[in-house]
Image (cartoon, rainbow, N blue to C red; front, side, top):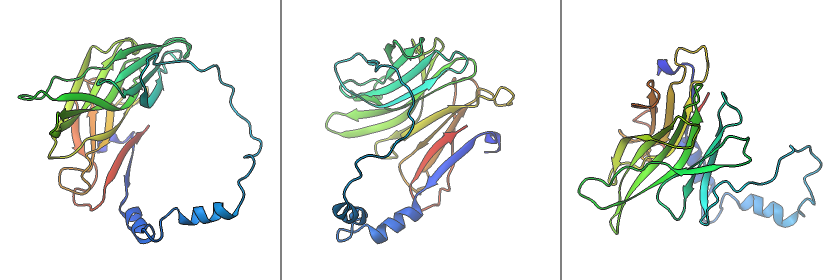
Length: 256
């Protein structure tokens, strides 16, 4: 991990908190009971007091679709600050949705992010989830999400990571890189977060990093996984970041 010295990696090991909850959160004494007791004997405050608030413009219908979206994400192109990009799950549709604005959010375009073909020998349904987006210093947009392969009536056939790339500010995604496949009997790839080294003086400038949870706690092949790309998203190298012998579940995130 020495090559990631400019990156602050936060792995939240939840073992201790899980043990603590196990001691206090029981059917007879749930963890929310103390708060309930307090609220049941104290009147709610009429207001939170005065505070300053930011001025905002009118709401804009970004998706412009009849169906609902979820897990929304938005980022800004620092090389062209009027260019915003966003992403969301599509509740009634399979692909991820991507949005782009070039006028500070006053108007938006929308496009589907790529999905891979069905798994070999199957007719499974593929859908995307868990959007995360980042611009590099050259204005390239990278959109990470998971792909879930769902067999009709047979549960989950597998999951994998996806990183789609846009070179026009988010108006289109000509390609996507799909990697780190896990079968339905193995681990569930979940909650990826993507970032880029945007330091102009860094030797790792515009390297792309993705961290996610392989949803298996302390097994030898689960835990926190980190992928990095030094060729602007063309290829990704995957490593495990936490202790493979650790007993607890993990969640990975990046902050630059």
